[in-house]
Length: 376
Ligand SMILES: C[S@@+](CC[C@H](N)C(=O)[O-])C[C@H]1O[C@@H](n2cnc3c(N)ncnc32)[C@H](O)[C@@H]1O
Image 1 (cartoon, rainbow, N blue to C red):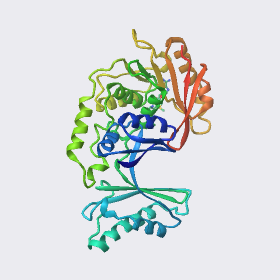
Image 2 (cartoon, rainbow, N blue to C red):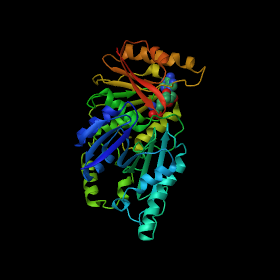
Image 3 (cartoon, helix red, strand yellow):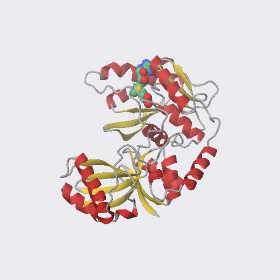
Image 4 (spheres, rainbow, N blue to C red):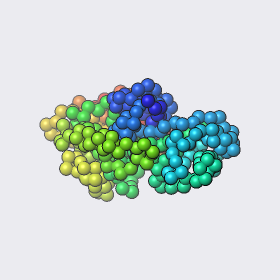
């Protein structure tokens, strides 16, 4: 069994570890910003297709202490690359560096590419060529505190790119983070879900997919492992067919979205349609103050990420919105849990309901919390 490392947004490691365990991964070990595990080819295909919270699934090949681009080059030369690709494969190197003597990530990436290509040229007279967009073998180089980890990237494009969301106009929540927050919250998909500040509808779509048992990678056209030597097309087709057969046709409980902004409502509806759930998810144009639970349904979860007011002076503009959210849920949504994702603690406290919990996450570089309030 091969060793892998699935990366995720910080705060989601435990959720990702639970997802991997459910998929049958072995030696699952949560770390910082990801989870190590072991598995075979079928597992890595299923991980890319099914993981809702992972950013990418990496296969580490080399770990080395490096203090300069030349040391990096020498370390990469120690690997026998013929095990992983041939000169007829295209390649690309994606690199990030942090807190290290090597500071220039593009140059570091070039040194890795040179080391691999030079080895092939010396041994065979032919060098692999570079395809930065869709390489057959994509490398991921991570340099942190002078330790370089070089991996093959089995995902290549980030897994949060599900394929249902086109270019955005509003500030949307990352799909993997939205799904992760729902999983972290322990939302039971047999109960309703509502996002009264739904923006582009990310919580609604991810919630509907969870409830339908729909693999988040089903609409994607390409995963990195599809270009690897030894890619097993039959096995991949079987894994995908199983996932298609597992999709439920109907939601067990309502999934609802609302937004005051007509443009957001259009966008959320359009995204729900491209995600194949346009006929299942209801999106209404409505001010949060007028949000009401679906008639006849049992209590469920209200989840949202209201505007944060990141720029100075903006915060006060949103006091009323957070207060209105707390008031409407407290008064009209008896028994529902209210979950609010925000970077701003002062705004969160304006909700005014008893705080039941507060869990830290990162939205990109922004430290945020998922607050849980006692509902009505
Ligand atoms: C940060 S965005 C939510 C982004 C969303 N989670 C997504 O993934 O696209 C906040 C949303 O709250 C909406 N909003 C602001 N004030 C509102 C109000 N009074 N009633 C309903 N929606 C409101 C905005 O139009 C905006 O779409």
